[in-house]
Image (cartoon, rainbow, N blue to C red; front, top):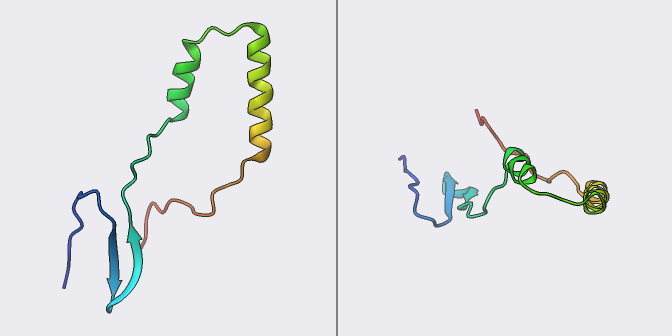
Length: 77
């Protein structure tokens, strides 16, 4: 038997032989790409002091960020 998951904004559980093997959930998170960020920053006028403070904050944040525990799967074959 085959089934389709349509865009219903609800979680969907995939079963294999009646056993749950995966859960698909809607991604309602707003995304900001690097390009979006670059465009926003290009329109922003920061003082030299604010720009230096922003750079320090960015460098500090990079030191605390960790890779996500999951990796997006582009192909599952």
